[in-house]
Image (cartoon, rainbow over all chains, first blue to last red; front, top):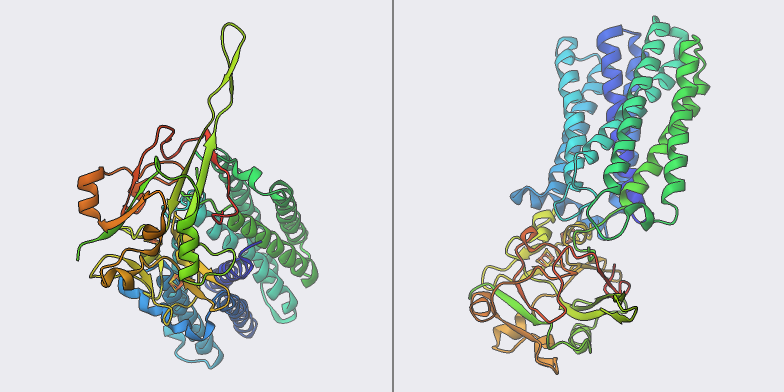
Length: 279
Length: 208
Ligand code: SF4
Ligand code: SF4
């Protein structure tokens, strides 16, 4: 648990992107109630804001935080991550503000997909920070995969929870809710299969210590994480398939799945194995 | 001035750690922070022969490592502020602690454990090759203090002409990752990078 602020930052930022992209898809495909959607879009920036605060607590010298742009000169992955964060945040806030104040509805249709793409760019930029040639246990496509999956699993559940709590005046919710249930079942399956692949990959790394044996709590953490992930997703998906529309199962699912993602990420950071760990 | 670097002769080093301590003393480093670290690397086992007798094949050696002022430093590439920079005049890699934000990303990236976070100043710190001493014609303090004369410092080209170009010695990582300005003089027991028979015996001391 050495990098808690980074655990919170990365998971929250990725969840915010997942929520934004899911809401964007709902907006494009289901054309639901406007006010409800606007309020839901605003929630994205609560998640993103919390993530940003967590990232600043990671710095030894938070008051110098704007120095991180100086590294753009040599394309530091961390500087680029901050730029990507600002671009996604900027585009997302612009879009939400345009909705809120009813500015240029035609233009909104353009800003939304741009912001969604910038969200995905942000996740890839975060994963570039951690795919370092000198860190054996991070330097693979499993890193972007896991980061994308956090967004893909948390996003639909968070969106469903937000929409359900406001469902009194949300037309066409039932269909959207079922679609979100289906979507998260699919992304969870991909995430699970991938996670097993990732653990196998870790186990066969040509290093002197078994990464799984590095942490006394590594196995139990992994098991609990997977149980929470599956349990959380199923709770929401089952209620969606049954046509339930209470916000609570979705909200609890959201909390459980988020916790599972935090655990997965803590494991990711703790499994840091430098190419120079004497291996 | 050319790229400066170190030569570390593991056949001479006895693991006395005078280099580590003289550096600690000169730079007033707190407990737990060692800009120069002496890795104790050892391994081996009992081997049974056909006639039923046993002998052992144990081995041990020491590798004294600071920052290697790499030609392709992973730390400066990662650093988001440019605080971690390579000096043009001598190729020494130095952190400007008026710019550093203390994100510790350089620490993650360096495979030699060179950048270390100063918990009091809340910025990164590391071996600066004693560039102030070097500018006045002196040697880095570690080199001058080594009682076995196992360390040398100078233009890396000159050192390479004299000692060759080996740095792929366990427990150091594959040198192609950062192209370090260090040469390791081998000993009878030396193992290559990636070796799985030995292990670092003082992981806590070297900050693993
Ligand atoms: S040894 Fe580490 S800190 Fe020193 S230059 Fe190389 S990568 Fe940077
Ligand atoms: S801790 Fe300082 S020197 Fe290291 S990467 Fe961050 S800003 Fe650069």
